[in-house]
Length: 625
Image 1 (cartoon, helix red, strand yellow):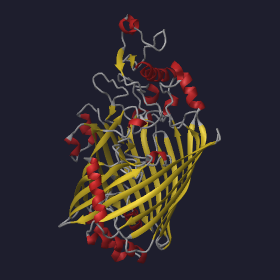
Image 2: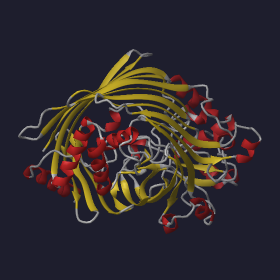
Image 3: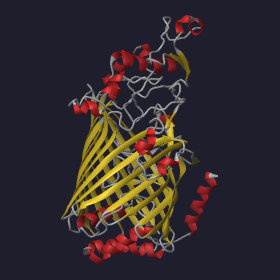
Image 4: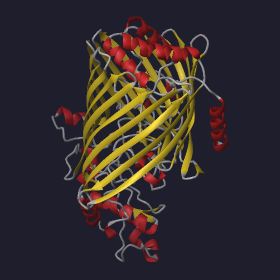
């Protein structure tokens, strides 16, 4: 069925011919949203909705305002968008891209490269129907010889929303990529639904709570934008992936994982806005989280088994093109310890602060400086096969962590990380767009801070799972039964008194615990007993081995004058990346290593840390008609 649908989409593209267009009401990463933010910074627009993408009616109102009060260059941009929306036609985009990652291991003096060839036909458009009703669609195919993850820089999400169910065209694997959105707006009230990416707040592309760059998902939202306050609520159906974060299985996901988010924003002053927001990740459908009520109270009625967060956003907008935004995203904190002044305690949060500047000149679009931190185990959460026994295995799907189809719903940096990033966007000459950027990231594997006994429990669970495809675990302490005879559990062990007090847990022969320090690395033993070092202490970047990542790059885009065949745009991008202690992000206590000793497994992991220089290059052309 998917292949038939894909061929149908391609067939429509072949026979339909229209003008260039971009799907502004479906894709929150469309360039329109950068322009809209700039127009807000310049004072053309008094406020913007907090949730992206916007309804087409809202987009038209923004464009109409800019065409009345904007500068000459901004009026031209807004008029181009407005005219295309007004035409209401279907449109085709056909792009081809060549990308290469060149990796050089400084320690081994070894160099290797990965190439990706991609072809992407898309059928896109925005239809402004009658009386506030609109439809947006972005229907296409992404065909490539290699997965995006093999050629993207660290902490970068793919631009495409494809699932691993391809058909082969020569050396290429093709997957459908479909996004749709239906919206209705009546004055200040908007409701919309569909399947698309969703973004929140002033941090385009990488927000702590809802990032535009995360994977798409079915969703429904309602927004009320008054002059002095606004309220936003969305309900999203996420894809659940395996509990241990096995990268070979992250392309497969189950439904039944849900996410709800709401935000209340107040205009305290023309220069100051304050927002409070909550998010909740939960298993199965719970219509209580659709209500405009505190999620914390709703969660408490269910014995607090769901994964809830809350945060605040403060935006200072003095005018003259400037804004300073600050967001605190809190998962869990030991408030009693903080009151005592003990900051080496349970603090699970994210913090993001950023300066934005949009100068009122045609050649410079925006300058931004941003700092983000995510403490250990923020976003992570345990998930059981059965809540009464609190047992999980390498087969367990996680319905509670802050992940959708293997991609973080929030920030792109993993827990126990921080990042400082600068970005500048220019239009040096007509039709040429240029962006330069640089970032510095630190990341530690939080499990390196565990005590020796905690590491042993985690490792032996993984080791016997690999060795025997089952393991005996004391579900009170998380301890593992280790037979004196070695790795194999013989019949005496299975039937004798030695395993009394242990529960036999059958696995698929993989790691039960994630130990790579990612979103899947959590703070609970099998049986529901806390891993004390992970639960009670901060451990923020306090490990012996810290990975650092330095990136520097640029992107160029040049659009030729409109031709008979449509618009032709050439794109080129380059990123230089230096990584110190590359490998910190790999499994530290995998059962496939160590030969039965956690210390040996840890030493092997530490020995493999290395220095890497990566270079990423992409060149592409897009034809839109």
